[in-house]
Length: 387
Image 1: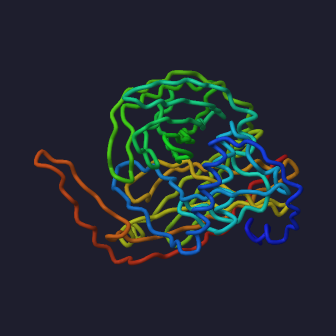
Image 2: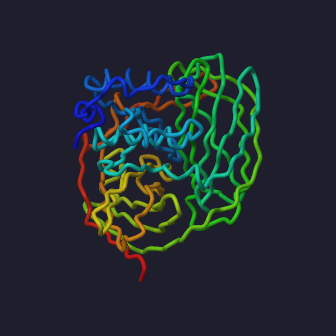
């Protein structure tokens, strides 16, 4: 499949067809961003993320790029006030250039829509702003499906924030939560971001009472921390969704995957699943990660984005959730292919420290027989709808 840049070469362009028009700083930033990344894309090699050992797991960081369009493809340009689609276009462009990104998404985007394509339509406008230590933090939109809340925000700061790292919100009644966030700079002193907070317990809420108390913003690029006090409190009614419980499971080579629940909304569907790992695998490999590839009986392949998870160190026994694109209303079956990745810890992908009274102490790498990386695929699971 051609990427967007190859498609440009097939377009016959008449310079007289173009009209000069004013563009915002937001649009300029997106154009600068894609030009810079497109230049570096060919020379970029994936690198493993440093993993910090912890009792709970929160994953889902992804490296993304942004796709641009010419007038012939103007219908694909996200509206300026739609931060959901801003990140959708980033994910869509990356999926078109690679079958696998660092967040573990599998498959190539085949449709003109994306994971967050319709989120703005069904979201609630929040527009709450708090300012502290010279930084303005504004929640723009939010949406809740009964188990997962997705929020967009903007940050204005004269201090460099990089891909700003912030704490996750708390939702009343949710005790086991996973989440992801992505912040990107769009212009001088201006950032936009998207965040998910997902309930990993087997219960659904009609209303999300959200408390988001941010006391610091971290720049992971230079490890600086900016203290502040940004506090938000609001409620979201759950949008209409259909939940289908499942007891489907598949196992191989000491790894078992269980599909627990599927939540279908007007704009997406979310898959909740868990993994179980045998003692033999635990004693051999440092880390186990399971991702899902999903297609339907009509041939559609669905792009997805992980919402994080919670479980044991190393991800041995863990619960996850992942959001996928809008489900084709004509589909009657989902075919789920679990992909398993076993890996070791080494100096390139693992660092663990312990905070003591005398300072920071580094914990040595564990010694296990499994080296490098081993990948395999479990037998397909089939979920039937409309029965």
